[in-house]
Structure formats: C-alpha cells, structure tokens
Length: 310
Image 1 (cartoon, rainbow, N blue to C red):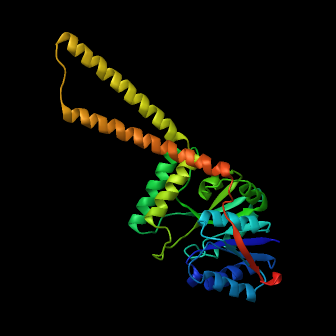
Image 2 (image 1 turned 120 degrees about the vertical axis):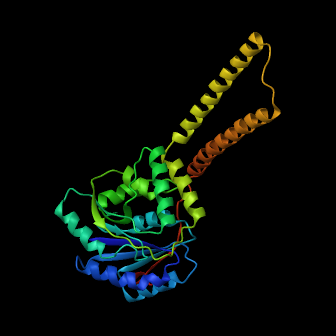
Image 3 (image 1 turned 45 degrees about the horizontal axis):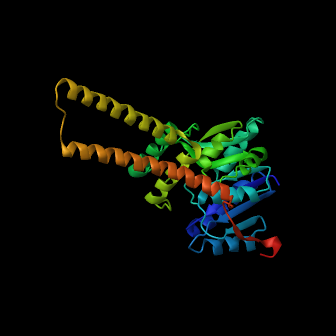
C-alpha cells in the first residue's frame, strides 16, 4: 500500500465527515492505493458510530476502537502499528491543521529521496493568549531540563516513510510522549511551512496539560534528580557554614542569635525541600514501576473494516 492516513477520535463527531471528504480527495490526487485509519480513543460522543458509517461506505476506511481512553499519543502509536502504507501521514481530525497539507508534504518528500519525514511548522502562532503562554512555558521548561530539544512551532501533521514509522513502533514506553520520541528517533527530517487555526474547542484541560508536562519531562530527562542532589548539597554546605559561624560567634563574642520565628522558618524551608525532593524521586520510582510491569500502552477492543465484515 502506498499511503496510510492516521488520526484519532475524541469528541470529534462534528469533524469526521468533512475531514474524510477532504483527506480522501487529497489522497486520490496522489494515489488510489491508500487507507484512512481512525483510532477511537474511548470517545464519549458518537464519533465511533460516524466512523463506522464511513467504513460501510468506503473499504479504504478502518476504525480501531480502543477499549478505553488511553490519550492521544498512545492512540496515535496504536494507529501507526496498524498502518501498512509505504508512507504514513498523521494529522489531527479537528481540521485545525489542513488535510490538504498531505499533498504539499508528499511533493516535498518527492523532491528529496533522502528525506524520511516531512514536518509541518508554523511561521507564527495564532492562538489565544493563555494557550500560547502555557505552551511557551512548557517548551522552555522541557528544553531546559531535557537532552531532547523540541520546537514549539512543529505541529502534529507529518508525512513519514516506512523505515521511520518502524523505528517509532519499537519505542516500548508505557508513558508515551510523541513529540520527544519523534525527535529522539532521529532520521532526516525536513520542515515545511504550515498553518494551524484554533476553533476554541480543546479536550486538553489545564489538569491534563500539567499531567502531560510532568510525564514528558520525567520521561526524557534525569536532570530533576541531579538538581535535587545539588540542592541538597547547597543546603548541607549552607548549614555547615552557619554552624561554623555560630560556634565562632559563641567563642569570640559569647553570644548567639536567638529567635523562634527564624528557627521555624528554616525548619519549614528544609522540610518543604525534603518533601519536594521525595516527591520528584517518587515520580521516577513510579515510572520504573509502570515500565517494569510492561503493560500495553493501548488495547484495541475491535477493528472495524468493511472487507472484514465489520
């Protein structure tokens, strides 16, 4: 098969029909040998029903229905494992990224046979202030703490060759953070200018964003642990210096500072730092616990495809 298109569904029913029409029309201009894979990520609306109706109409449409909501990145990895095309195009179904980018990316890849991945990149961000501010903060924090450097202008939409997709599938983490995996895998990647709109609807709540930030940073960086070591060393050296100073003051001047308030403030500071450090270490230990269990990062309940009798 020449081409596989992979996208995920979560509260996406209002987009599916238009997305299908536009992506199928663009794919037909490139090849007649293609498939469209919808991964239903436990969507609570009627996304699955809409996608199944497309299966009945078009044998090139396949739906992977996950057993529950596993998250977009895990759902995309599931779609990649089921894609069989020589080239695989992934994109969000919500039409914020243009389905017609497929053709542009395809021709860009044809221009250089050594290119393994074509990535859509924004020239400027067009999103609400709060969303842009939190996005900038996340990328700055992640890049400061991780050995993998991410661009805050890259979008989800990208066209990948089979060898690159096979490399991605070999990543077996339970906690999947795709933007970092895409970069960590390497290969020859080329950026192409793309646009992205924002329709005001997003399934990523502030809580989900914070959770994703913690998972992303702790999945690709050990720097927080190193920072804790140096923080502990700083407290040790500082407290040793204070002890020496107080001893000298007692011996030379015969008096020391007294003060319940300052003592309690120092105790709270040290206690808070210790609890914070234990929390960070606990996060890493929990990740080790999850990875050792080797649980699947997604479970497919059923695959719908017209040729298989639905």
